[in-house]
Image (tube, rainbow, N blue to C red; front, side, top):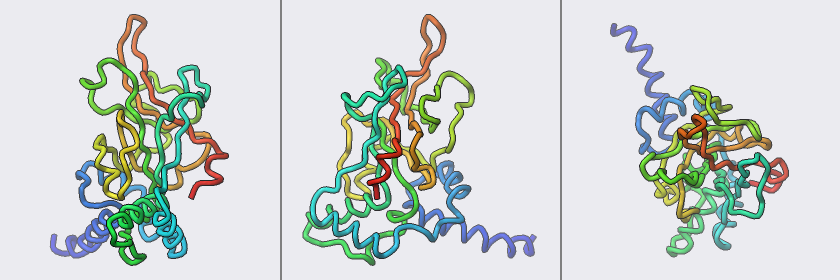
Length: 233
């Protein structure tokens, strides 16, 4: 037993360090497991010093804003005339927001003060609540990442290209890096590995509801377009 512990203990300790680097220790144990599976190999990567400097400079100049997830109508077609379905915060934007918040307080953010989790190769997706009368009673919506136009109704378990590293329905998550709450009807915030940031994907918050014709999904679907990513940092 002692010999086994001597072998496994360093491995467990290293894994726990990875968890703390990737995200602050507010995550519940059940939410840490996907993080370990997907990010252990990349825990030391993230923004380099030049990118950090550029992000801090952007935040000092003014409010950095966020990247928009285009809302997709129920027909499956983009609907650019209505409000976005959600927003995306890349590592670069998180650092820029943190620098902006610190600038406003009179204590400018320095390069060495940027925590590892903020610059880690993880992006956050904030999606609005799907419009359903019982949303307040249904709790947080479910979440899926699917090819553009792929349906979310009604296979079990729900097919998804990548599972989130963690999910929250607390608007205070954005305050961790100094950003304002993006929507009054914010439904869910989730983190994904940076590899999932590519065009042709739909990020979908949804509720399964029963109707006269059987179960269906009520969605808030946001699409990543390839041309959007050309300007993102």
